Image (tube, rainbow, N blue to C red; front, top):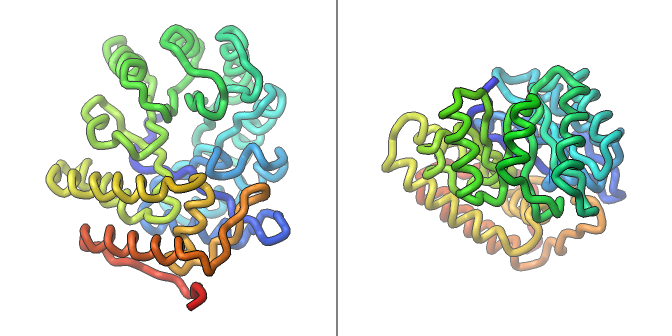
Amino acid sequence: MTIQGSLVPNITLFDASGRIDAARTRWHMDWMFAKGVDGLFLTGSYGAGPLMTTGERISVFELARQSADGFKGKVLLPHVGCIDTDNAVELARAAERIGVDAVGAVPPFYYKHTDEVIIEYYKAIIDAVNIPVYAYNNPETSRYTFNLKTVRTLQEYGLAGMKDSPLAIGLISQVAYGAQEAGKDFQLIIGTSTGWLPLVHMGVKAAIAGINNWAPEIMTELVRATFAGEWERARKAYLVMMDLSARLHFTDSTIASHMALYARGFDAGFPRKPMILPGFDHPKYRELRGILEKGFAELDLPFETGAFKLPA
């Protein structure tokens, strides 16, 4: 299968006591799908996967399946990466039973591992399921950086593709062009909206974009214009997206996503502790509201708001 379009590393919404808020999380999934997001990358860094139990992560997979069933053609790509192999395999098997399209996994994190250990970890996941498995190159969180030799070894074993976040152009260009030259069905997905427009010309067809958590309309328009060949519109949307994304990098991306949703008037629950939201009287919320309004206006897109009111 080829995954195409704009996916989201969606946040998981918790209540004030730290439990998963299933109703709000489901609302958020439905809202993003309705705004044109093509798929969900579940329980990754944004989604607080490392802060959740295996059972909690499976419950989020189930919510996503329920949400996707209400729409047509939406992709579910759960993140099953864990610090250990057994739990990663358990999550992958559970995701397959639920009926997802593929699974992705960051390398086992915290400890420093050799290439050989990483290869065995992914082999175990690939052997455990009959759906595509994607590696997730995210050295900032995993302490492991993929190299071309490891990618090609796993490619030969049956790895379906790789989600890449650091965008080291040397590696990803070799991976993408090498697969194309060899006629291999191996997909490179960028794990960020950054680089979307130039990398489309390298054959990239999908991005997992954090901006979709709080401004999916903008990424949807960017992808639409790109695939339609409307390059002037795509360039404009890309520059607006890049500006908004940069302005939201003032704190952890999960916290910023909650704050941006509140700035739009949507009750976005809470992140799981130790993450903490600033109080709603913090001036950053109103600053974000202005930033978002300006970005939407530049693209002449409707700016939908919710009923949540920030303190006067």
